[in-house]
Image 1 (tube, rainbow, N blue to C red):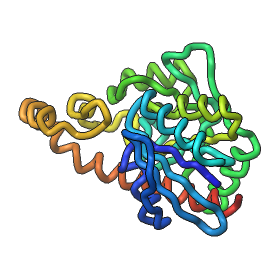
Image 2 (image 1 turned 60 degrees about the vertical axis):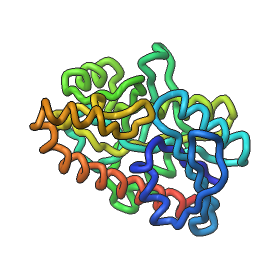
Image 3 (image 1 turned 90 degrees about the horizontal axis):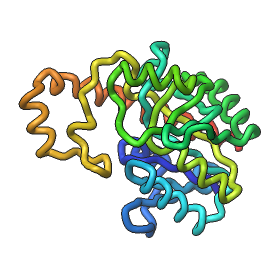
Image 4 (image 1 turned 180 degrees about the vertical axis):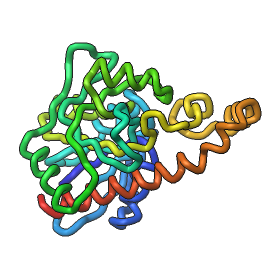
Length: 244
């Protein structure tokens, strides 16, 4: 029984479609889906954005279902100019900006298995570190600083908290992030148009794009990047589960 944990519909929607997952009862503020891939039972928790949502949903999943592996997954900002949209970062160390000095490390056996499975399917994946932050990071200068400070390749808002809770429950975990916002790519300032749960705020969007019309023209590229990232995550999960 595998638990897959991601924040947004855009991150887990392709998993639901490809693997035919169905919705089951869950805690308030999260969505939980269940299905089977080959001989393996899958649970997918859609948590919402940020630490509180990630911890609440992951805790619910771990308390209610005897998962043998937690996979923290989703989109990420790239902290290296070598990373392209849709490329996967399989995390070796998970750092957190608000928990300096500590990091979480994935189960080495499952990490090795995931790396071999990805290689066998010719997926664009590299081993690297991630850093979890409390806000959306879109500026190249801030990404570069984070990458240098943590020797990290990807930035997100949930992986560390999911991993830490898995460790507290003594459940093995791995984390994989698909690049949707590459370093240096001209992306809209999404932190200005999203609500607290990561949803689009139309009121904020109207104001932002009316005053910054150039950002509106960048939305199609963002959509293409997200689609590539979602397909890469689904391919990774399929390759991993097939070899468990």
